[in-house]
Length: 165
Image 1: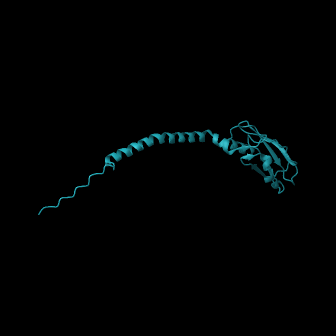
Image 2 (image 1 turned 180 degrees about the horizontal axis):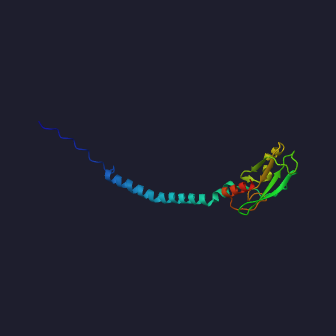
C-alpha cells in the first residue's frame, strides 16, 4: 500500500507579495514613520514643559486685571498694604455699618477672582458690612492701583493674599 502524496501548494500569484518581502516593507515603513513622528512628539513635550514652568501661559491666559482707578465709595477707607517682596496693594476697608470707629469685630477678607479690580467686586461684599462684619477688599499686584506686574503667577497672588491677611 502506498501512501497518498500531499498535494503541492499552488504557486504564488505574481501580484501577491512574498511573505518575507511584506515584513521588510512593513518594518521599513514603521521606521520611516517613527523617524518623522518622534522628533515632533519630543519637540511638543519640551515646548509644553517649558511653557508650564515659565508661567507665560498662566500669566497671559488666566489673569485679566483691570487698571481702572476708582475712588472709594462712601463708607470705605482707602488702605495700602505692603507685601514681603516690596509690592504695595491697594485696598478698601468697609467698616460694619453699625460699628463706631475703632471697634474690634470679626472681619472678612475678600480676595477677588482673576478679572477686574476691587470696585467690580464691591457689591459681593458690601452686604456683609450691613450684617455687622468688617470687610477688607484688596487688589492683587497688577490689578487696579496696586503695584504693577507684567507676569502674574499663583505664587505672587498667594503672597499678596497672605500679606492682606
